[in-house]
Image (tube, rainbow, N blue to C red; front, side):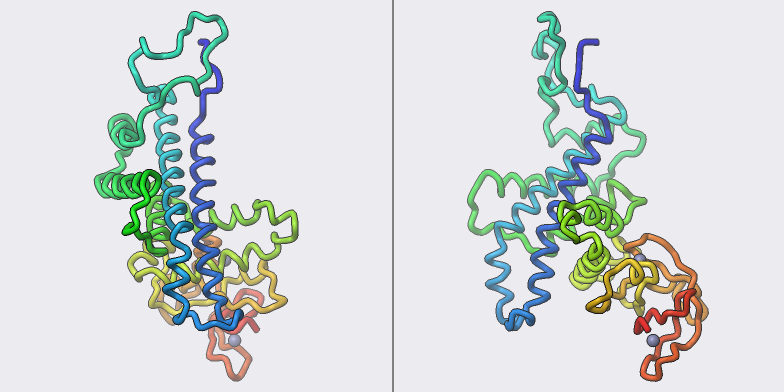
Length: 302
Ligand SMILES: [Zn+2]
Ligand SMILES: [Zn+2]
């Protein structure tokens, strides 16, 4: 065979997830900045409208990049069957194999984004399903109007970006937790070279806290595996891994199953279950009765 640079499924998955992370980074920064409004001496409700209207370009770009990331991941699913299914056109239009230099895969025109779902549903073991198809189509249309026009009426809400990204990630990688994936990205981001590594847990827990606040309970349950109405606790591992110099207040873990006798805590950032001890906290002012196996209170952190 004279074809070189044949992409692997993992190449596409890695690139696709990097783009999802890039989009998340944009919206997470917007959400965390406004969450700190009071530190800047402004009331969040008073600036909210103008804040989000100034963020319009960032939000539409984040949505477009999400779509781009999803396209890469779908190409990865096709490449798992065969990367040659990604080649468009009839053979007479392919680059010539008779010139003697071989052909790089990138010289082939690849199939259009609109056909990706159909190719997967035809060849892959698991079809993507109609719900996915509809969402993908809707996201692609929106991306096209963002990239090819300056429609002033086009608005993208921050929760739309967050929900689209979480929906797509869950559909494409059902066994993964987005929070856990985001942590991996933060732990290998360029600013870890500047000392941000020790704040990666703080950052991811803060971001997920904000996202949970934004979403309806059914979506929280779907994307984070926790019941939004349930009492939440600090995760023993996240608390240990976080930088606690300025405190660590994020509570994302829930008892599983729910109930007074339950002795297991699920953390969506770790995507793991921890055994907990059901004893009263020794701080008088704290009503907590869920302790880590080291005896730290997961309600007050004491
Ligand atoms: Zn955790
Ligand atoms: Zn306590």
